[in-house]
Length: 191
Image (cartoon, helix red, strand yellow):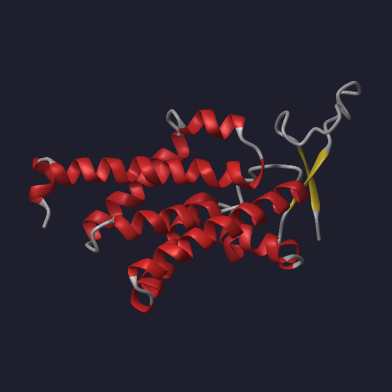
């Protein structure tokens, strides 16, 4: 079942259709049936985490925790990094395909980018609750407010690569903050 919702802006307009009449084109509202209809949709929506009616990006980031514990238990560091690299490539494809199907290059329900980027953050974060919670909060902050250069690339790059890259940049800024935290006195207060 699909439902149409009005477009919120210029994204989704193709060829100026609907501009003269003042009616904006409809956008597909994804549901369980939609994400199960194509492997790319299922991946992009994080297996369903992106269908959350409240804060789908946060739900996607939270979904990275059990995946991290699983991968960290079974994979060595090199294989873990190779898996994250493969997830980035698969996400580029899946988010590109899904964005075109939804006529929204970065639909809020596509959370594979959050899952992949936050897995990278967790990989480099000390395995202590305080560090991981801090990493989560910083990552969500950077992903939501999109400080420079994230905002620049979010606006300029379209398609799956752009979707994946802005979260990778949020992961980089998160890790940079955590490294600074650890390097200074604040890091000495936490074991």
